[in-house]
Length: 119
Length: 107
Image 1: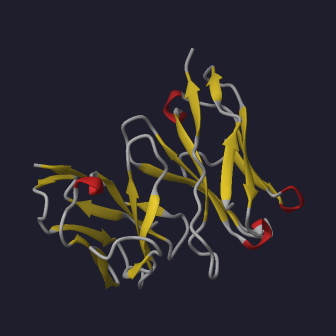
Image 2 (image 1 turned 120 degrees about the vertical axis):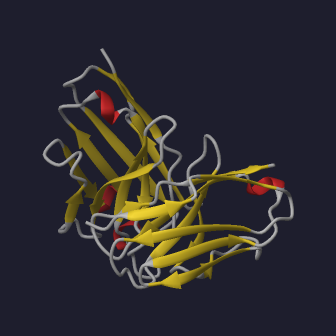
């Protein structure tokens, strides 16, 4: 069935790094623009990063620019988020999702993976 | 960057009441607006796309309207299963932006 499954979250110390992965199945991943969205505990949704279907166009929220890197491997139907120089304020549930700009695309979200930045 | 201002931040209504949430964009986004429903511990679920189109499988008591900068989301008759937080999101421009959310509770 159509799904996105995130992995790679965990507990990391401030200044540390994590790499999140998102595995897609049940749809043609290479056709879709993708985004990472996060939600801090008890807070609202915050868009983090976007990548076009080919990977040629990439955008970041100001809060993560220069620290996070989004990438994708269409051959492996996978999306990634490399997170460096992590801060306490990066603590959140991280969701991968199809981007609404995808022409005639479905709206699909993963179940999320939790990132906790704490000493 | 486009800012999305959503109101109210929370509301309490009775079963069967009409519930209205508004979302205002800081600049014209045409109809590039989604509304999501999020229940505790779950990922968001698309309810309305392109400002006014009901997502497949979503009950018809949900509706959306608006274009440009001002948008409205309505539940015509609130049901217990509608208890959730609702978010608007613009996708006219990057960076994307969500509204702050509206928590809907039963009175």
